[in-house]
Length: 413
Image 1 (cartoon, helix red, strand yellow):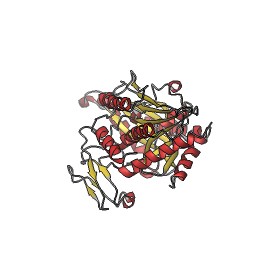
Image 2 (cartoon, one colour):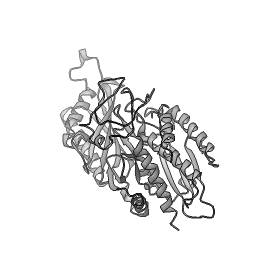
Image 3 (cartoon, one colour):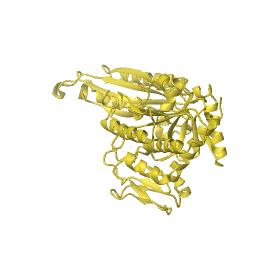
Image 4 (cartoon, helix red, strand yellow):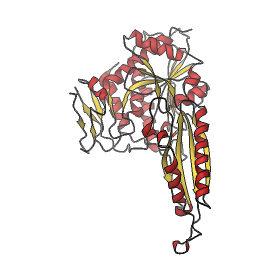
């Protein structure tokens, strides 16, 4: 494993704008995902990955061939090409801080953006290490370009060192994970793996074995528009209905007030193209207990009914669609997906703990489709934010862990 090469990869990848676009049904949703995929394809080919290709949906596939004479199971590593639309990924200017001294980090292009030790206590454990930040005007894209860089470095490490016995090691780079479409066009039969691992985790030493179960709700509030001069008794203002609806959602079930294993109801977007006549509210429903999602949806319906009785003429339509399910429900079917990771850490003399994600990964959907796929640490910190940063040494550790996972699976029959 080459840390300098790993850093160069990461810096190259984050400069490509791959921001996902939720306002289109195109897949991928942004042209930069094609661009980054082509870069990765060229690098895989340069590493002698004979079957490397980018398909007609921009997914990038490749296989590190099995050690000669070895016929063990195939495993897969996955990361996603897109970055979050919550903060721009255009014109990312990464800053490399070598031998971090331990102080707050003021970002150069927007000095109001400060990565504070008080808010990021993990920084105290990163003194002396190499950190990469943004300039304060964009996100960094470590989610998930740290994962991409780790996988690409793993590929070169395995191709350069033939001493590790293993079956086929599959790599797959997907698109639009950040907007819930990451596995939409993945053919698991084509992938042909017994287990998968997403490289999309925070910090180091964490093995994500549970995610939220998730549904999306679309609440359409309909009123009646008419000129305000003659509105008395005739106008029904959908904006007022939307405001009443949002105000009645329990504050104790918001992401701002919940933690650990508590679920939440999170309104995150409002569309108001029809002005007074119609408002659309998009809401995330999340809980580790899948059964709670139905109760959250019922709460939305009950809230709408209360408002309709208070504001005559106001109409509500509530549509709920499934997004993904708790990772843990499927991992139980193949416990080796977890125990092989723990053994890899043990062999490296490092600590690992099983953790939960208050969110989801492509692994949630892979697992639901029958491919057990826990999530591994890659050094991500403060994702989706201008305060995002990553640590080179944590990324390098992830490469080491993945190499040992490959070695451990190489012992399976």
